[in-house]
Length: 56
Image (tube, rainbow, N blue to C red):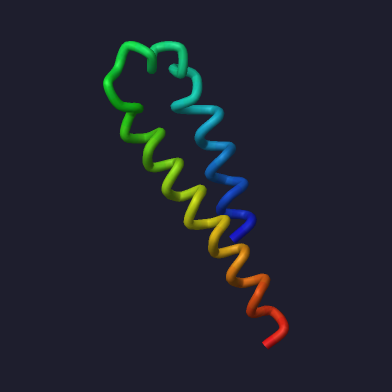
């Protein structure tokens, strides 16, 4: 899960983040930025859940 989160950040910063200066002109962030946010939130929630269940 941590690997997925790290890979997500790498893909985000080398790809869609390069156009962040243009986001002020759009009503919503680009789909790829929204997708990266969802993947990030889910992967870090997975890390937390997996960490909590590690003792069981």
